[in-house]
Length: 323
Image (cartoon, rainbow, N blue to C red):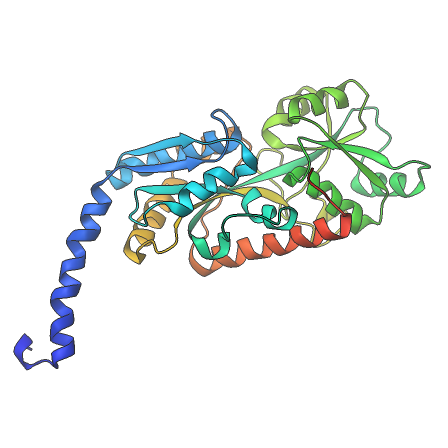
């Protein structure tokens, strides 16, 4: 139908809509910076770089990784929140983002309204490890020992209010077991104390513990995800061992500032989703202890809100405090 025969409001909308296409195309042609809220070389950084390299080729768009570590990921998150919603700045959003509101009262943003979720990159499972001579072979053994012990059984993690710490607190609550968290400055010193016999149990990332598990220096009791992980197929989940519903992992999602245009969200989700299906990318992620994901849209939002609620409940019930 000729434009002159359309209702006036529709006719006016046509040139406006046509004018948006070049704008979106121009935005898509620019380079994109993905802000990673941790130092270079860690699991989140390496997983993001692995996926972004393949997605860059798919998009035909240069992707730059910018590491902004420190401050419990708050400065990096704030930088993305303040960025223009034009596709030039995106965020490798970690689980810490949804934990922070439960342990901090003064956040300068609300992740649920100030960011646009795009796609879930990866889940980062944890594995419960002990030394080979530790008197527990299963999570039921551990729970019984922790209930019977005169003193709480100590478990370590790479820091207070990390996902690994909260995974241990969640297990203690579910098992009604007496366990005491011992925070370390990173996973390496905690693992060293497990190996040295100074710490009984640790909730560790797969990447940090897998080499010691393969060598026999560490004994895995369980993985924390709802399903077994590809790199440790013979290690049962916590849920399989009598604790149904226990499903815990860290994760990394791609997000943009609030107001990111729907065509750009769809373009990024499509390209990064295709990258996550690439066999070479999946193989590389497996070496990092990461399980490829891919959730988008309402499913991703629901996943993030579910995790935020879970950790807020665990933090409240366990009395977790951040100094």
